[in-house]
Amino acid sequence: MYSDTRPASLDALGSPEALDAFRVDDAAEVKSLLKSLMDRSVTVNLNGSDGSSYATTLWTIDTAHAKLAFTADLMAPAVHRLVEADEAVAVGYLDQIKLQFEVNDRMLVHGHQHCVLQAALPRELFRFQRRNGYRVRTLERSSPTARLRHPAIPEMMLELRVIDVSVGGCALFMPSDVPMVEPGVQINDCTLELDAGTLLRCSLTVHHVTSIQPDSRGVRLGCELLNLDPEAVRSLQRYIDVTQKRRRMMSLD
Image 1 (cartoon, helix red, strand yellow):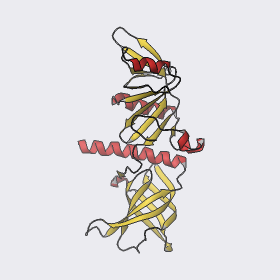
Image 2 (cartoon, helix red, strand yellow):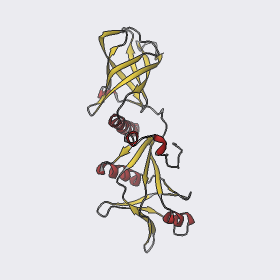
Image 3 (cartoon, helix red, strand yellow):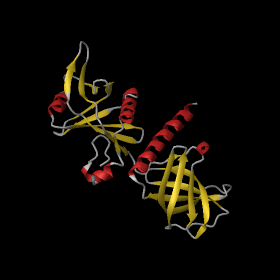
Image 4 (cartoon, one colour):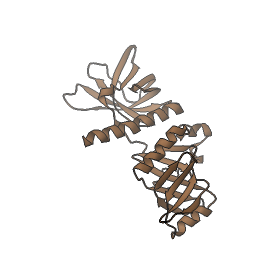
């Protein structure tokens, strides 16, 4: 379902409500993601319902006329097959995020020096993690925190630092002066505050308890995230995107 160049099967993801966790239909956000594909010259694979496939790049975004244009080789048979196909879907990647959207109203437009494959600007697209276990290390300056009750001592409230996070799990730092949490325990009513704009309510299942360094004075809790609603999943995906970009910029400084 998450192969590199082929579209994910939306039917395999379940009900329309389940798709909402991956759907982006805000016009400004759709435009922003498409512009990132264009500005970074990301390879976009166009997949026709007839089995045709063509690797291209996004050339222009015309929001005034609700049109996209992809680079195209007039002599490539796959381009002409895509124009004639009943349906076509585009797949491209921004770091670890797979973007997918329908490519409707396809037609070849000839210029003096170039040929482009024009299509309708999509009203929605879908975002999928390229690897479900991909984790991003949080930015300590935003003080990412998990607030929860100790599962063995309900009257004890804990505020644990979030070390890293993915769409499916997180790692928390448990200080050595706090009573240990055992693997297999489920923790309900947890609040993750990753930054000022990302507040998630969820449940956790602790899968691993591992030491970090002898002088760290604590252990790492490897947890699975449970009971995130679709909006929370989207918020977490956005946080991961932004943090990836910030870490990449920090590495260039």
